[in-house]
Image: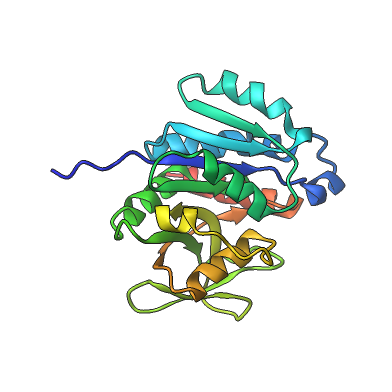
Length: 236
């Protein structure tokens, strides 16, 4: 029986949640509830369902309330918090990556809502890829103002990431290889989506695995859609 190396996990939760604040949500974005469960709670549950119990979580200065809340909620999980207001999603991603000691790193944005079973199934499929490969979660459910389209070949290797429409979009969950985590991106890159597109353009091995229903929770309408999916999936 093959013994798998443990995975470290990371959660990017340092966004400002401006559109949710405009919709009347006064709490930090990680604590915004979907079906009564805060986003950060749902994402940590996903990691636990996938067998990952060592996490690095980055929140911004306004999200300090998340730290003690998560520690009280998940005392069994080994969690390191970074409290820092970053300039971009890529800076947050790099900050988290520096703290994860395992070769592979499973990283999710806090606003990527999906069921724990779907998250765990993605991780299982992603870990079957070669260890030198990185794997993106993708979804056919497009519920984003600015989707990041993913073009794959017949072997599900990612050949292009960008604005040209395709049948799949990124889902905010990534299993990153050691090589992808340690490469130095050009200083011109400002966002995580630009870094992912650059990795593919540089011919790093990047594959895609599908999660059918993932919601990028940025707006009140996204919360309503996620809650609708949660109710429909809970029916027998």
